[in-house]
Amino acid sequence: MQYIPYQKFTKEVGIFSLTNLLVGLKGLIILPIITKLLGTESYGIWAQIMVTISLTTLLVTLGLPYTLVRFLPAEKDKKEIQDGVYSVLSLVFIVGLIISIFFIFFSKSIANFFGTDSILIKILAFIILFECFNLVFLNIFRAFREIKKYSFFVIFQAVAETSLIIVAISFGYGILGAILALLIASLTVFLIMGWVVIKKIGVKIPHFSRTKKYLSFGLPGIPANISSWIVQSSDRYLIGFFWGATFVGYYSPAYALGNIITFFIAPLSFTLPAVLSKFFDENQINEVKVHLKYSLKYFLMVAIPSVFGLSILSKQLLLIFSTSEIASRGYLVVFPVALSILLLGIYTVIVQIIILRKRTIIIGAIWMIAALLNLGLNFIFIPKFGIMGAAITTLIAYTTVFIITWHYSFRGFKFNIDWKFISKSVFASILMGLAIIWFNPVGLLKTVIAIIVGALLYGTLMFLFRGFTKKEIGFFKELLHPLYFGK
Image (cartoon, one colour):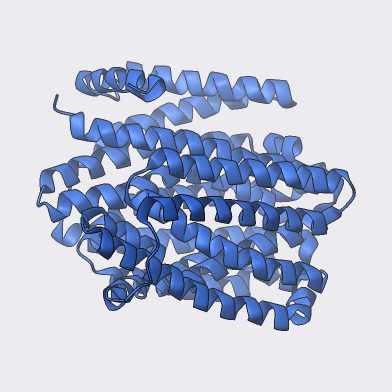
């Protein structure tokens, strides 16, 4: 069948989408537990610690986990695979140890900045080290397209973290218990995944023969990753600096709500690099174009209505998952954040063209421009406009990234974009949004009903508007059976 190569890819995307959805429940469970039981300020501290983990893992791993995804799929020699994997693990351990010692040594100063106790920062130092190893292990599974193993460990860690956090807070250990829960879960996953990787490839002292090649590919991505982090997360620090941890607590739940759309981005960012690299290296350019076309189409299929739905229901959803104070102060943040993540999703697809051409330095430059713009505007907007200022600057930064990436991606490589489908999706989303506004849901039950009815209405409208061809509908029918019954 014409769609067979993409069917395999979409099956993997479907499995990972389900995984990502289940993992996403972790945030939805932890959010009300911390905000309702520990207060807005504690959630602000929690949010700052989370973004610190995300920043330090970017620094420590040197872009090497993603490098494994780029190069391991085409590698056949087991010894070369061993050397690549253990070279990366060795480098990550050395850098991770240095960063962890730094956090322990300066724990008091960092704790004062966060408005918390130094013991949390010392625990954080160990979490960072294990999370870096876990990131490498997960990308090994990703490189070999072992989706089930990847999904199992991601879900296992999320369940372990959520369960332990609930127990810790229930027994009165507060934010300290929550951070300890993260450490225990991270260590447990590290031990299990390490054993699985050793069983798969064996043990070997690395010769670092591929280190130069890996670093030359991975290091140019660090400025892009750090700059991306600045755009996505640095506003938590600046809000905390100018307004305090309580305002971080107002902003973070609303940001997290708008950020839900990343559930649909993650499967693409996970699966596309390994799949496209293989096709590109084998000179199957048409397959690359087909994967890019349908990846963008299927992302927008769910992302466009999500922006409308999340924005309209933002206040009700925040009331359900947090407190009335957070909902009243933060709900306006959701729309610019959701729109920003929509642009990020489009970027995730089209940036693959630049990656395939190994011009990662362009990506770094794009994100550096966005980061500098975001930081500069945040210093102006946040003191004056508070958390709404942070949301606006986030949208400006993502728009900048989208425009520049679009320009460079399509200069030397083009694929078809279904503009008719996009216009139909926007129109159907507008009608769905008007129906939700008319229904005016209040409370958990009516909000759930509004979400379900809205999704059904959108799907029906897209069917009536013929948003998909007969071949695509037939493809989905063939996909569903093996996807859910494992055949």
